[in-house]
Length: 102
Image (cartoon, rainbow, N blue to C red; front, side, top):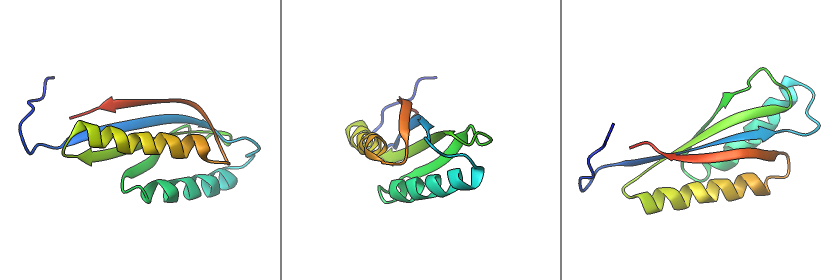
């Protein structure tokens, strides 16, 4: 599907990341770690959620979405998300990718 690029239209960017949570052996511990991570992500004024591997104790997949008026701004914000993920002491980033949705 091709989207028209009209002035004033919204741009939506999505970052998805596969994470490893070393040393985490229970779902309760995993939720605690992810709660701290999601709180840090919310400080960047975006939407974030765990979207995969909910039943695994040592892994997670999260998605972060940003809405902006231009692609450059959306990509800068998603870059800050990536920086935060790679600097976070409680997890390892296995893979991450970004998409332009609208």
